[in-house]
Length: 360
Image (cartoon, rainbow, N blue to C red):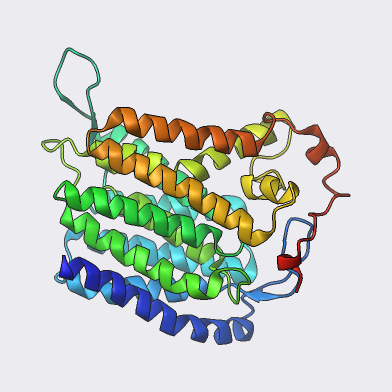
């Protein structure tokens, strides 16, 4: 237990120490988020190099895991490459297809280092308890999982402290379920990610002094997706912990991403085109300020996290009850259906209501 706590503390301290350095470095290399459209809720340029500090916090804390296993080495290699892609995008701006190609490549990297979804528990009353995927199917499912979760975290990064806080809550929940199920390797790695996000949150919560940028958000999503697969073997049947529990815990950003895809398809917009229909935008449009919006979403994420913990403890009825409550809150906030003609039609003319806490 002391080892688990030390990994968390080291990651938090290293990130907290290196984040001010990232703030100073960002303007020198052009890694600045300059407000240029009505989706952004900040009024002045903000450094967006926080992903570097998060990465350093995670990597330094990984010394507790030396010597690295094949799986951990693959995750470090893939995460490093994805961070580099994200930083380049933060400075120069990448084509969405090129960014997606980079994400797929990173998913392939960890697959070939044995970080894979190798099968699933058989839910039918007949047949083997565990269904083993052929290699080609395992590859497709693994890439889809990693790329999907990576983009889910990337899309939720729209307000000060939002993505970092939700990822921290999710990581702590996954770490608890992993430790209780005996998957200490997963718990070590995921606590390093949790500590790094907490250290970064000191500078990223409203009013933010720095953003994590695409480099940070994609790195966190990638780490969550890949680390949850560490130790997955056909004999253990751990796919429950590898996918089901993280999906429950990350239900808020997953819901938001799915609604965004459907909303854009219904409104005949490109799926990759950004808009102001995300969950946090909807809540702010109701008159909430940034701080209260973020805290409301933290609360929903915490409910989802508790639901995941209860599910892993075989308290499935209680878990489903909490999950349904949180899901209803998300649907209510997302609002009134997938198609909100008012928001879509008046998007260019509307601005968010200004709350005292949002004035700078």
